[in-house]
Length: 415
Ligand SMILES: [Zn+2]
Image (cartoon, rainbow, N blue to C red; front, side, top):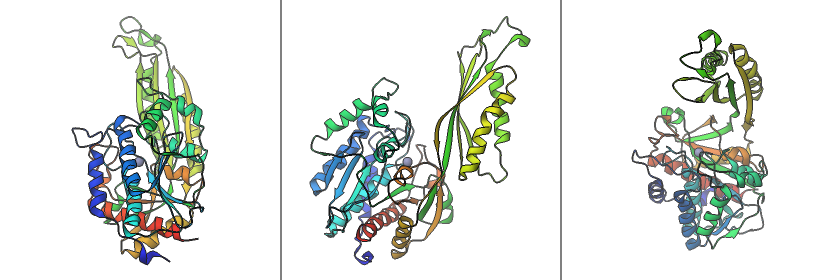
């Protein structure tokens, strides 16, 4: 084991950098609005590239805008160990979701460079492009396309609300970093570890700085349409109406009852409810719902998801219901290798740790189909995330960064 010589991270530097990068897209309420490849997001990639090139790290960019920073190991032909996350945020996001995983990995490289230690395998910090899926849908496509779980061409053609394509945005990113190399998709990795704030309340409540993530919850996502008929609000009697809003409300109530479980483990959310045409004097002819359904048990998610259409149809009195499944992902359970390295690293530094399961999706989900993967969670205040009030303590950020750095070093020197 080479743990003894694992270098110490610079806790002040990594915290300073969090505060500095939180200025890129800073909102008046203390949060961050830095959606994918906006000028502020491009600036994250560019600024980190500048530091990396000064330090002699290799920098490369792939065709989907994922950026890779590499400290070359003593055996540079071996597949590298990677760590990273995303730099984009939700429009009303916080200062830690995503960027923590990027900055922790980068600090790992800097700590090794400062200490003058060179691991056997190369180590890489990665920014996975477009994890949040807020400006361009769907989410987590940077890691997905890298490992071959998604196709590049349709993603490049994807447009934001202003009509700009992902392809154009990636061209702007490349133009901002003219001195970096080109990276092929799918280049093999030895292993991958991602740091992230927990986005839930468990670690903070228990006073434990390190969560060793056991797996990532699967999800089924649906678009539901309730189709009635528009009519004049002043003339059409109730008996003659096919009011899509009335049926949609009945559907929402019925689904919430059907998906209610005593154990409170099913995560069922209707995140959008839109009535059309949305005019005061027109009986709504159409309601669109967006549904998100999650549970750790793949079989149960499958079963509940299949109930959605018949349950909605049963609740609708006069309208037609259509259900379209937009996205489906299975629950991932990480293998032993990376979590074991995280535990060794936490224990060597004397940090308390516990196993924890991720209810939210992360890039590590796709990476796990490519190489042994794992995740480190740190506490966040009140479990609040996807919110401008998102917060984390400097000492927890430091502990998580140290564990990421040590885990990368451990894996890079191991078999
Ligand atoms: Zn995130």
